[in-house]
Length: 231
Image (cartoon, rainbow, N blue to C red; front, side, top):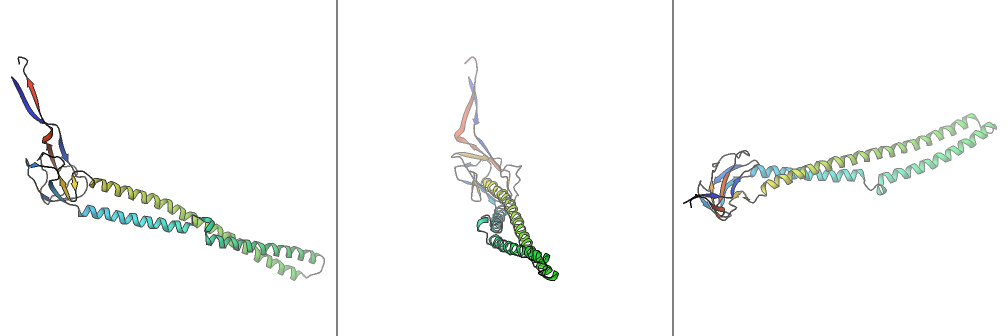
């Protein structure tokens, strides 16, 4: 004599782990369903708005990266501001060197009594002016380099921020990219199934710790038999 029980090999528990509410439940416990049948319709407006806001945040971060790169002038060889300052420094250095030679000549002439102390002082003042012009342009170059470096740091920060937001969007979309989610509907993923343990009704807020429902795949039905030793 043999005894047996019917068992189901595949039982699917469907959970939702993102903010949503139940708009409509299309099935009841024990109902037969087939592939693509809608089981529960969700209201995903808030979650999709959250994804949209994250995408806007990413777009802003990318614009800030572009702006920071433009300000940092990553191609320093073609930086017009730096090029102008370097030309100014070259000119200022040339004028300073000329003023220095003139001052040294004036010193010799003064030592020989050929010019007055006043003339020497005036030459010294001119030399000081030219030296200050060199120092001012040099300071401007260093300031520009510092500002460019700050902008480069901004690029690094914004790249990190952009990467973080991009990953967040990817994870959020991945939660929607499930075989049992089609549009706003939770659908059946087996060809021949029965739904059971439906945990929600219309209007309920989805709780990630509570499953939506379960599906038994009837195509995985089998008999577990017990056969007596006498048999």
